[in-house]
Amino acid sequence: MNVNISRKYFIDNIRSVTVLIVIIYHVAYLFNSAGVVSNIGKTGIPAFDTLCYFVYPWVMTIMFLLAG
Image (cartoon, rainbow, N blue to C red):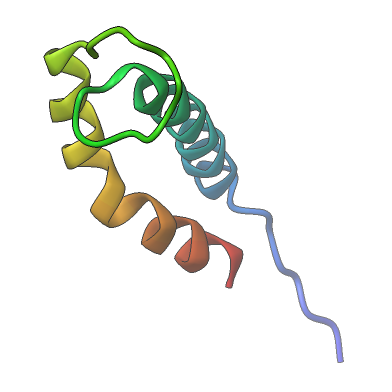
């Protein structure tokens, strides 16, 4: 049985972009103003809240889909 399976490079590209988005999300999460528990006495940056609200619901789902 000779099976010729070619690698789909666009999946690698989607995976790389998703990992970069996760890194940006975690940096933005440190500076958001929506209930982050920390001992820093400064208020957060509200613009980062929008990024976190947009990325949070789907980033883990897409990572699970790409891993499977």
